Length: 215
Ligand SMILES: O=C(CO)COP(=O)(O)O
Image (tube, rainbow, N blue to C red):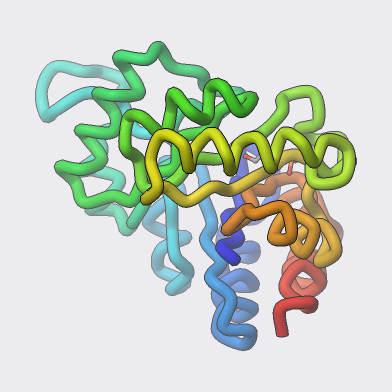
């Protein structure tokens, strides 16, 4: 299972979370990555943790003030990027353009979507992975794998119908090892989570708890 921790714009210490994530990944053998704010990619990557951007723009080098250039994210240490997160929705053409940008910069890609139908559309754009996250469960602590398991199995089926190569993650409300196991049982190959780690009093303990059933 792949555990991708999105720090969003939460007021956590990204280096502390990243250091804990790197240690937990090393100790457990579970793939754990952290997606900090763009300005913190360099500092997070220095911890040795697998580092992802939260977004890259559908632009090349040029006159694009305020954009997140894929090459700059990669130069700072990112090895992958989320796209089309529920909190940063893109037009279809912009997802496609951002995938091209990420490919140019050698970034792995995960396109987020709300539901299985959108997952099918996202998978057709040929990212490395897709992540289904029902927006109404994001940040609630109620795991999608329990509250809406059909969304996860539906996403896995929808992706497989369109593109057999794409990994399917699920997210929203995931915070415990039990949630991780449920996600895996439903066919997901990873989880995307945020508040369960970024808002935890002890992010290291939260990460240890997450991977514990996989040990
Ligand atoms: O949006 C999410 C991850 O990208 C999910 O957020 P929570 O884990 O806080 O529900």
